[in-house]
Length: 162
Image (cartoon, rainbow, N blue to C red):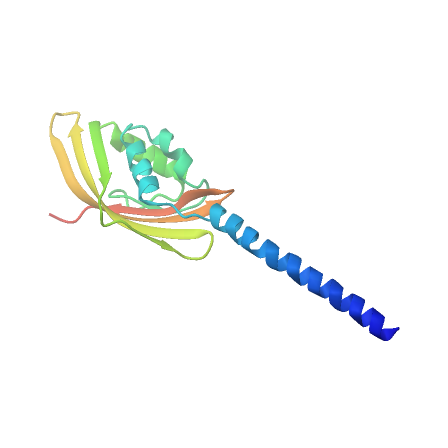
């Protein structure tokens, strides 16, 4: 009788192991599909959004809440709403602008839910007073996956000193 129970238990364990082995590749494929990090095209979509010169259009890319964003001035913004208001004022001085993520963009994963990236950005702007502001900006950005979306939780934009 013990032999029969042992055999049934062995068969059950073998069947369970087989089911798990068959399910594992499927689970890995699903996990990989949902954790695909931002790519250069996504980075460009963010910068192309700034070309509208309306900061409210960028809300879709930024995490809400207490996150720190650094821009050329002021020293820092402590939330997306501060950033949106501050940058919105700066954008009123621009008539039109284009931003291009250059080919030096690098994207790095830090686990399943965090990605950080760096790139230089080519900026070509026509200001309201008719002058031009062409520059190469430095950009460092940290994304966190929140509710299935990659959102910016920290960003630093600067321009090299002349």
